[in-house]
Length: 380
Ligand code: ARG
Image (cartoon, rainbow, N blue to C red; front, side, top):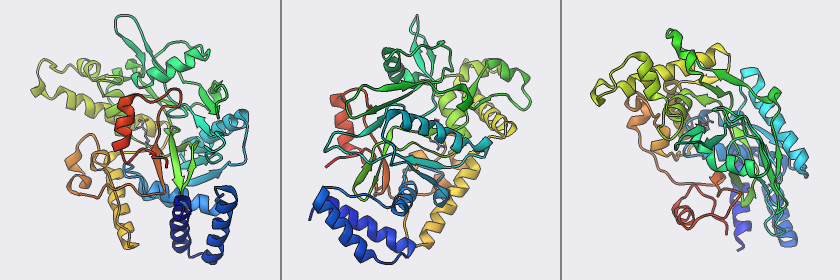
């Protein structure tokens, strides 16, 4: 049997049974006919909605899955032009932010059409993200994670102030048409300035972060259909920003500065200066988001919710898959329940998958890694 037919069938059976919908047989016949006639098929709005929710539920590396049923699925498959799609990405930013009461959401643009080479690609890793630039003396301005994409934007004619926190423009490409670059108007951007509840000097570090992480470089596969442009978001857990985006040496690398301002002895590891700086940094990020009334979860609450997710899945007769190294928070791991658990780490569809950078051919090394990585999309 055709691979697409069998994937469609597996998904439709699961979808209809979880929702207790009638007429599965009729729908299966319809979809098989459609595939025979056209080589593909189109999900109904309800199938898409439930498929996207299952994809979140199946995301091995996501700690926030307790809320999978609450995902807002924004069906925008009817949009065709770059302009319409960019406008709708801006709408996603507003909808998701929701005055700080962040709504987990996914916007689904039309399905990939590789037969006619007519797929939509969003080049951005996240809809809102800071640029990064090489500067003199091996220095980096901004977010080192964005170096390559920022260089592409500059090639496409983007001009910026070259600060540590320049918001990158949206870049979208349909088929092999030239990519279209659209700066995000300020009115769509919400950021939180980082201050500390008791350390007055903290705000002088000039740190800030954006309110909502909206991943835009992954693809969604449901029942054999690939959606190549599907920006999705939840709310932040504080360690993502504090421990990783600010703390990682290869990112903003602020621990030495924070430790110095705290007056810590950084001459030896055993003063635990990194840990003390990390703790205050995490506290500052949580405090600042709370003060700005932007939704954020701390890592103790998030891990408790994850355990609840596991239990409620087990009650439904499902076993979860999870990637331990992503679920256990990057700080105080053993102070959370997740540390003591083990899970299978199989990748099951529907799911969100990683994809190669959109602006160039993958390197041999990337190809090799991808071949071995279950979190990458593998096209038939
Ligand atoms: N860790 C990524 C970041 O710091 C965001 C990943 C998605 N996170 C989320 N809470 N939904 O930007």
